[in-house]
Image 1: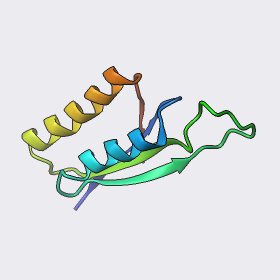
Image 2: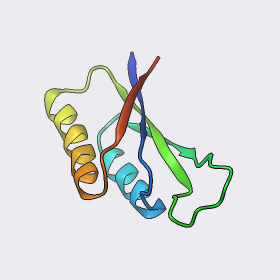
Image 3: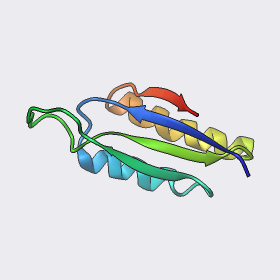
Image 4: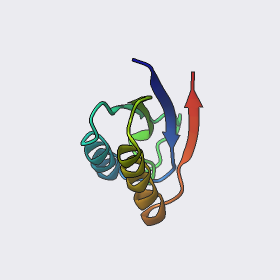
Length: 89
């Protein structure tokens, strides 16, 4: 089975929200999330402990599952701030 992999980042999203996003995305069968630790050398109370996450999902997601994945990401992007989505090889 082949997988799609994306790096999703955003500044200033709280840790709890990153975990909530991951919890919702993991409800889609085959979706995996790996958090990316914050890399800023200076402490900033406004920065999350995470700078983003890697999203991995099977190529064979059906249209409904793809729509759910995009709806979840769009919901949080509108509520908090837009995500930067980058495809990883």
